[in-house]
Length: 349
Image (cartoon, rainbow, N blue to C red; front, side):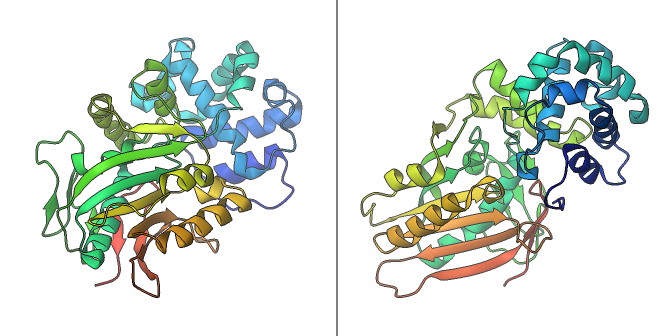
């Protein structure tokens, strides 16, 4: 997670995100910063966003907008710089070409700044699976009603359709096209469970059955992270068959409706989230926490979260469990997770 100081200009945010890295996006962000300060086309694209807070990640929105131009063959001159498309050109030479593309598509790229990052990292399903094992063991319930807040396209809701293995265990269909081998480090006891229903919410859900939706997801995966593109390419055909429903709603409002009532006595409702609190206002965070505690007094309820600790470091994998008749909530820190989900490092026995 990048550390941004309060009051940074857009140029300073771009440079902070780039750091001293040398990949395509780092080179582009440093050049974007220079261009913004010089009053070039980047300044024109970002007009009205001069005071945008770092949490909006304007640089990622803009780079994804440029990537969509490449993916839809409207900037073929940039393909040579995108490794996922077979390009091998040196990233430090990309900016003059990218700047011309930006200047030719100012209006469209300005509109792209309204599109929040929609990186549906399917590798994070491994963290969800480790959390589900922990909750199933503690609750003694194997019928799971799975709910995801901030679900994007809902790819992680398909966790039981993926193959995952650790050092001495495996889970899921062996012939699944989505495979995470030796993806969990540390002590894990697998438990078989059945997902009785799955549903998610997002402020702007991505429709995975459309070409536009698939292009949008692809555009937010950094073009030189080839392993992430391979994972996304593997899951997209699987997700198009009986895709999960993702409702357009905020987390608090949606959970209020989804968790209404006592629930089935032999079913564990599990709420799952991954790297979403970073983008939520404080009121939304408080609303979700309040709902979980209130509804946990009424039903068997589990919570799996993969979120950054405010003090920094890698995302933490945590579980919470509410069971009828228990006076206290069971809370566990299971371990840490890579930003994109793999590996999951479990630190509890």
